[in-house]
Length: 108
Image 1 (cartoon, helix red, strand yellow):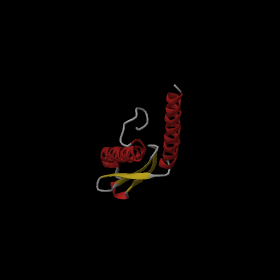
Image 2 (image 1 turned 90 degrees about the vertical axis):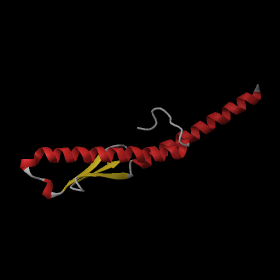
Image 3 (image 1 turned 90 degrees about the horizontal axis):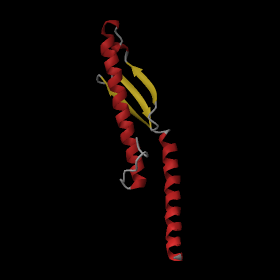
Image 4 (image 1 turned 180 degrees about the horizontal axis):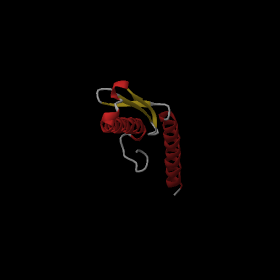
């Protein structure tokens, strides 16, 4: 019986170590960014590892009152591109800890 308790203690210790590593990576992800773009770079966005949009850059040539709908579409496409890249970055960082094992609620 004592042998089983020792195994549980070791498992608990490993879980706590993994939780600490995950917390550290999540903190570091707030400092990492990716860029998304659309329209050949006419619209660029920056997204961090917390999936927050941190910057938007629009080339002056893309700003045309008559083509407002096109600019809105470019912004939307750039944000979606940036979010996809940020999710991929988060997934790659987390799989370093989890060994590729998908843990529900851990990765966006």
